[in-house]
Each structure stands twice: as C-alpha cells, then as structure tokens.
Image (cartoon, rainbow, N blue to C red; front, side):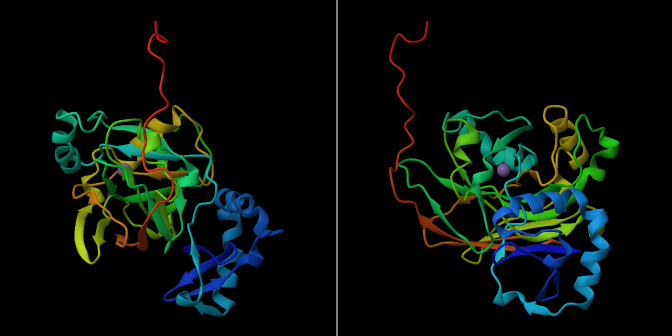
Length: 299
Ligand code: MN
C-alpha cells in the first residue's frame, strides 16, 4: 500500500496516478494536530489497514497532479542517518577528509538530523550561500519506523519497519558538526509517499538514482549497503528508543555533488517512487562562523 499525506494533511492511498482520500479511516482527524494522527497511524497501521483498504477500494480517486503531496513523515521524534554506508561514497570523500576540507570520520556511524529540516515533495529548498562551502545532494532510501522498540535484535529489526520512502540528505560540506551542517530548514526532502514494507520484496535490492537538471549524478543499488538495515536499526535502538514515525536515512552512494539555486533535483528509489525538489538561494546571513569563544576560556 502506498500511503500519502496531501493538501491540508489529508491521508491518502495512492493507486496508479490517483490518490483516494481515506482520512475517514482515522478517528478524530484534526489537521491542526496532524503530527498526532500521523504517529498514531504509524503505530496502528496493522489495525487500521482493513478500513484504509476498504475506503481505498470504494472511494473516488483524484489525479495526483491535482493535489499537493506532503512528506510522509510529520514531526518525527528524530531523524537518524547513516554515515559512510556505501564504499564508493567513502572513497570519493576520502581526499576531502585527508586534505582537511571535511572533518568527519570515515567509519560507519549514526547521527541525527533536525526533524525541522524535512521538506515536502515539490518543495523549493533554500540553500545558504557560504564562501568556500558547497551544498551537496545525497539520494538515500528512507525507512519509516512503525513499532516502538529499544535494544532490538537484528533478527527482529525489520518487524519494526512500517515502510520505505525516498529522501535527499542535503548537506553543507566542510568542517563542523554534521548534525548542524545537515539540518538547515528544507535539507531533508522526503517522499513522494510511503510504501508499506509488505510491498517491498527486498529492501536490499532497490535502485537509487538522482538527477540534477536531467543529468544523472547518482546511480546505485541498496545491495551495496555496507551496514544492512537490520544492523543499523539494531545499532541505533541500543542508543535511543525507536518511536513510531521516526525516519532513518540509510546512507548515500557515490556521485554526490553540488546543487545551486535554479536547479531541479529528482531522486528515485526503485519500487518506491520519485521525489522532486527545486533549489533557491537562502536569504539572511550567509556565513556559518561559530560563536567566538574568548581565548583563555578553556583551561
Ligand atoms: Mn547522508
């Protein structure tokens, strides 16, 4: 089942080129409390699903082109993200690490992005223009958590997955903490919808592709993941309780590169769908100098 959020946080089921409004399946839907009903849906999908399917089968579809799709994640308690999870991406980044222009480590790990960085499909993402700094695209498979859990064994990890989506982990390159460089507003476009886990035969065999202005930049398959989904979910759950609606960005393959104002970026995850955003320049202060710490303050 393809589950979409659209317009004023209506709930939809996607069928081909149309979407059926199934908001009626949710008890006490309130667009003003959309994040609450979304988390409840993520947690309760097995119970709500028969009613969603009934409404989807009997309701009238509207053309997808006539609605505004929203990111299929709303105020997740966290966005977890895998670093260094494709060997060819680690290789392409190695020179930047070695010459000191990027500060991070070349080992797999999990970091956090701000939930406020989420952008809808079709959004215009405003990127900061900072001297000597590039803003890069990273196409990734997104995993949405359904069932809460901590200390999850690898053998049970996929039981906690509600479904899959496409995402772009937009990144300001350079030194400084990843969690800040990847958390500008709009730096996590997600969508175009969520495909429930039962519809994906093998999440470790999905094509990932990304184009900028029609030019292919990234093309890979999730069979190249260094750390598999069960391993990364289990690892993260030993640190933090995974909550319904949480999002996991699973890492990007080689081919990352700059995006500039005026660009159109298309990310596609096979079996899931295609996510498009445009890029604009962000207003306001265009530097990222850290607040100064007085000399001598550190002893
Ligand atoms: Mn990434």
